[in-house]
Each structure stands twice: as C-alpha cells, then as structure tokens.
Image 1 (cartoon, rainbow, N blue to C red):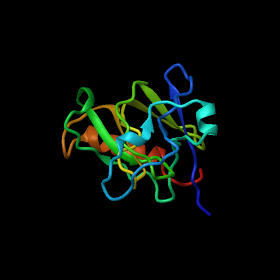
Image 2: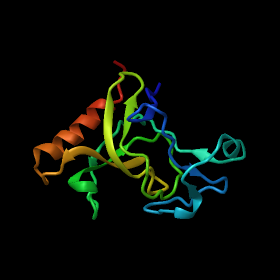
Image 3: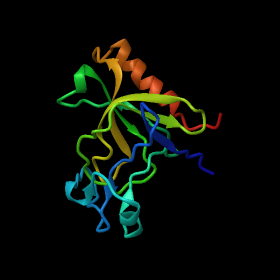
Image 4: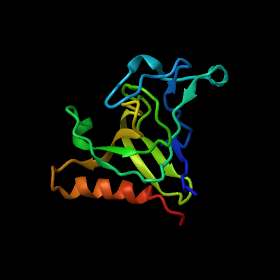
Length: 162
C-alpha cells in the first residue's frame, strides 16, 4: 500500500492555516494549464458541504521531489522551491498567500519546515507541486544554502514510515 501522510499547516503561533479552495465547477487541467478562475482564497465548512474542495497537503507515493523554483521574483532573496506536497491534482492557479511565515509539519515524524512564503498552493492543474520559499539565502546554482534547502525538505518529507 501507499505510505501517504498528511502535512499539517500551522502559523508560528501554532494556529491552523487553511490553503485555498477549488470551486464546485472544477478547474481546467492539462499540461501547463493554469486556471485562475476556479480557485478561491478561502472557503467555509458550509461552502465545502456545497461542493468546494480545500487543497490538502500530503506527500504522494513518489515522494516530494523538491527542486529549485526559478522564479522571476524570489521572496527576499530566499531559496524558492517546488515540491510535490499535494496528494491530489485538479487545482488551478493560486496567488500569493498572506499567511506567513508558516510551518509545514510531517504528521508522522513531527519534523517541520519553516516556510517564509507560499507563492502558489497550486499552479498547474495536472501536478502536485506547492511553490514556496524557506529561510535560507539563495546562493546560486551550486550554492550550499540552495542545496541544503532542497535536501532538508526532501528529507523531512521522505515518504517512508519512521
């Protein structure tokens, strides 16, 4: 069986953070399709009962596969990553997240990633990537910080029972 696990989102004061939601009408999907009109920045439990779907974070069976995200506007010069941290596809473009900084918790190990900024909870309808920055100054292609950031997030969310 798969060893998917959930990722909890918490603010620095430990209160839960909720990501964006998909409208009941759904999103356009396909290679590199980024649909901004199908998403809302928040939704209530009543909206969910009426067909809205909140983005849920978790690690798919293939693992997080974190990579550097070559964004044109890196947040405060920090390392930007793109990682498979959603177990489902079919979401559209989400804009900048205002809850920051936040923490991504591995619910099995208790380890966490301190996230400076979430650029996109989802971007393309056919992938599972979350785009975010961590608290390490980006030092370029072969940089120690960039590689440490990638390796740390991959390790914290490695898809194996501990």
